[in-house]
Image (cartoon, rainbow, N blue to C red; front, side, top):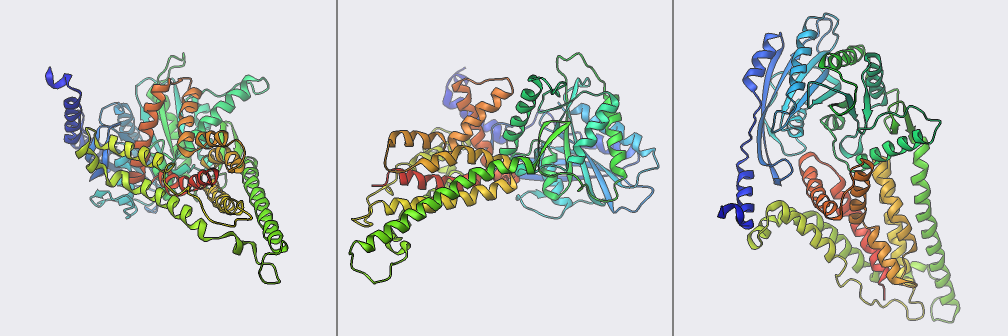
Length: 560
């Protein structure tokens, strides 16, 4: 009892169990090989291992090793130049065993058909997305995440499309589709339309973001429900996380979806036969592809499966926000120019021709805040992972806790560093220093938000909607406490915290303040871990780009 009652010993025991990484359920590799061979597939295995940068407390793993099993159904009517993938991810428990059974049943059914023109790969991966990433890297002969894996002994053609399946029960009330991939990538809209078509044909109830499709768009309830679904997609896409195995396929230009069977309280009940018929119809249609899916949109937002918002409609919203930054930067430039001309006209000794305004600003005074802000961003990116072992030796915390606490400490320390000191600019025009610094910060922010919006619109729009008003209003004159509060509330960390509360509110599962804070700390750890594990770019974008830029506006506010 003493071991379990002492919190310090209990945490030490939990870390020990986590490091041992002994799962209660392992993938039945030998059984899968025998079963796949019995239905006539070419069966191969791939072993992989990966040491995470710090323990993943969400999935309780640190030293990860596993085996992927895949079988190839060769196309009888064509050479092995193109292929399709049907994948089932398996985690540390057997919750997805129904999907494995359906995969084997479809493999046996597909083996008896003669119309296949593309190879079909039936893939069962261990450790969820880690196994999927290991297989994809080996299949494409690259190593972008440091995964250690054995080479693939069997290959098929170039992968044209992929479908991932997750089932929690042999009874399904609806099929939910996930489209958001790594770093906000989306599959071609035609693949989503194909899924919806076969769900309707088979009478399956299909959902998006776990929400039913609005039936009546003429009343107020329909558009409101569509707005709720659209906001959920914006928040999911802005996170940059792969919301299913399909998200990793998109990195390799493979159109993919993740289908999740939901067993809820709804009165509609379907068995796995109905799900299998829908999947068979999708693969038969994909088998007829003569070229990759490219005719429809790659950039879109979805208020419902039957409706979409194209890039031509939503991109101007971010453009108008960036226009505000450009106009404010132009105003500051004109004020600097007028101040420079007025200073020379006031009898100050100098050449007869007016000097360019930039020469009178004192660019040396801008070097300190720029360098210190970027140094803080670099420390925020590098030190949490590198210094985790030092923190665990001196404080009673685990590695994951050390990473999160170091992140918060560096983030807060950036507000108190001595780079907000007095600068000697011009005794007659003391405002020119902060005006020049704000001009640089506005241009820096506009360039970052513009580039982010082109690759991940949802992330760019959320950051622009929160940061642009505060960046435009901030100046060392006026109600400084009000500007300081506005800057803090629109900082990248506060935006993340507010997005988590909004996300759970839209899911109709609101959080208390304590629960929201715990979810925020877990999101920080997962964001860092997914960057080092899968190559998610949200963490480096915030640490190396937006946080230093935000510090420049903080410096402008307290310019003396």
